[in-house]
Image 1 (tube, rainbow, N blue to C red):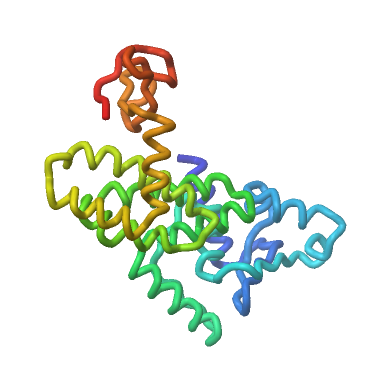
Image 2: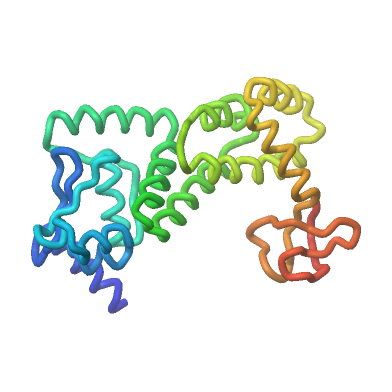
Length: 250
């Protein structure tokens, strides 16, 4: 409770601009922050602020490769442990245009926003943000039905060029393996799967690679019931903790 109240107070200071000693610049947008909060979570920004560079002297760090909306969300995470994808008002015309483009893309494919957050987290080495954004993607994919995954979601995601692409595709493949087991007698799903595999050969390659690398998946009753893991063939032994208490195979 004490730490929660403290972080709320510090975040309010950030919003009010109180005691801020670091300015994050992205395009025409400027965000006030505290070095202690930001540098303790980003090794890249920390190095710039403590080394013999201009950032250490002037207290300003510029992010050129991203969008102000994403930078704002990264700072939100650093202060609160969370971020959302809701539109954020940028007071400059140029940034408003870029933000509208990002908002439109986010509305059409919500996962794209979180993929960009993963890329930003990787770029500035904010590990907690990367894990949170990946979890948000996982939650979106899990809640989609298999038909929409095959006909709409997978073609869109595999068409996106992003550093976070392999992470997202791994999530898709793992979920698809479980969903296909549940729908193995559904002829419509089988037909949709064949069509998608023709249209998206990278998905076909990664599905086959998953079956080759991990022929059996299951939920282990000892080390993880929330996520499937590889199971040793024949013995039905969990390859993570070496026990034989595996509940389900596919």
